[in-house]
Image (cartoon, rainbow, N blue to C red):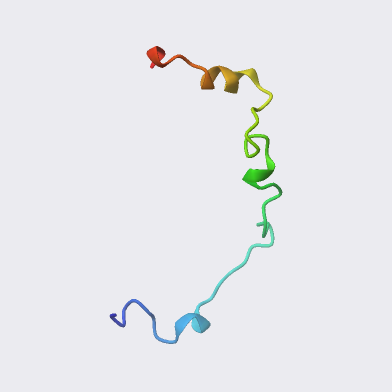
Length: 57
């Protein structure tokens, strides 16, 4: 490996700035939604898009 891939001093010398506004974890995971459980959402628009006939494309 080349020495350019790893800066001298490693990660200990790197400055990392943290924002207090950014959440560490999301409020809700993708698996914790209706879609994550394989259920349809409550809007009719999503159902109509999912059931769109292939000849309309």
